[in-house]
Length: 287
Image 1 (cartoon, one colour):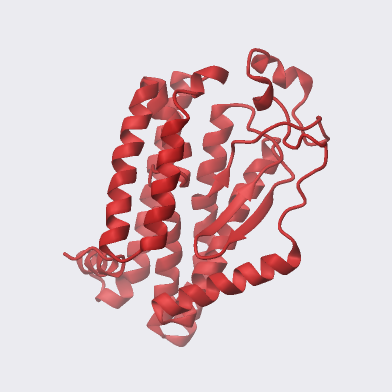
Image 2 (cartoon, one colour; image 1 turned 60 degrees about the vertical axis):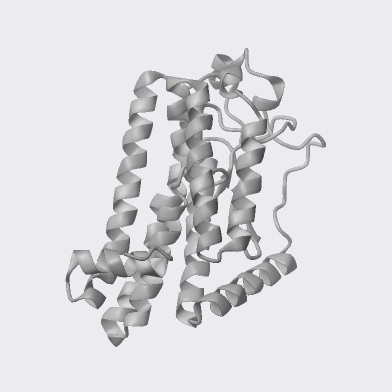
């Protein structure tokens, strides 16, 4: 996940140049500049709490999966995923971004200021899932060396971590990548689609016993809907940007899905159909 909704702080060295902000002169004040009202940079999660959060996350994953390999894979994949957001945030002038680990829920990359445009917000949102796939490489390598299928399961869960994040349900990355595209058609369309998918994901969480995730998403979807139509306040994607955003979203989702299936192919005797069935069973969808 990435936090691209940020309040104000005095301009700092990572802020866009004044001429770059000229296109936003009519935007609300809290969307133009950096984050903190005190002028201090967000220093991120304290090292001690970061270690405790990571251990809690790893232990929780080990408990629910029964595999220390999968637990390590998901935690490692989470850091790589969030670092992808951090790199993008720093590149578009939102940095220096920080990573927060949230026990039992996941991670969050947080910038010091809002994105300069919806287009930058889309790029930041998709950077996590795209970059996060790189975390699969060492696990596939360990499988190639040891021949133990559990390493491939670790790679599969890394791919699924990034694919699930592309679901257009708040606060997942997909809502920030696809939401602006839907809002370009009509602001209410975004709300209707996010509500429908959000309800579906919550029902899936309840039906598969993922109650913490279900409650978290339900609260996030409700909070998003309470905000009303807000994108018009500081500009929307242009139609060309909306087209590029949709293309990048679909491409990223396709690559994540292909990576997940590819990780399971050796365990499914090379059958893509069996790999898909195997993967769906692992996330609680019986086919």
